[in-house]
Length: 201
Image (tube, rainbow, N blue to C red; front, side, top):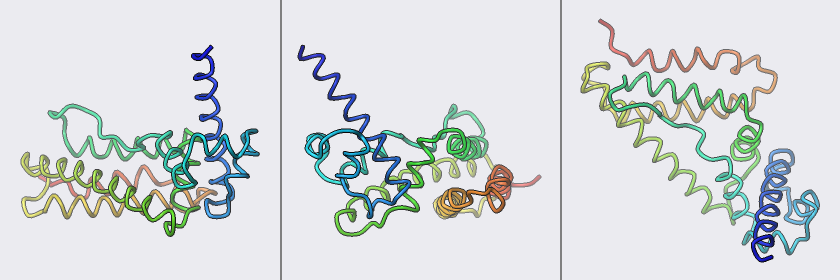
């Protein structure tokens, strides 16, 4: 019986997360109350507070449910610039194909103010940015060791450029709902960004 209750609680938590993501991405995080999320999920306000401390805690759980959008897969022996491009392409392919991922990033990049109770969330998101920088710096450093990029390119600065490119492209892709500004050329933009850093000859 206890096992069934635990399973039911897990199902309730998942339902709250799914509904929170949908309401946040539709109406905005600031404008959404936990009462509205409870109604959408068909549970009591108390049930929401049983699983989540506050709205910021629920927001971060929604983000974690979606998982990491960008991964640099492959073996260390692979071409690091190819791994970089494949990771970036894969992130936007997932955004295009997975509604959950698109709603989560819509919520994060267009529908939330990182102030007040969300100030800590802002710091956590920047920590994720630092992890992105660490990974891309390592890829560019390996590319320089293999003479795939110019020897005077600083891996950390080049990684920061890619971080700015990725973050800006991500927000613009989400904003371009009609697909006429960024979405139709996103694959070419990524290929151009990475290709421009590859050493010729």
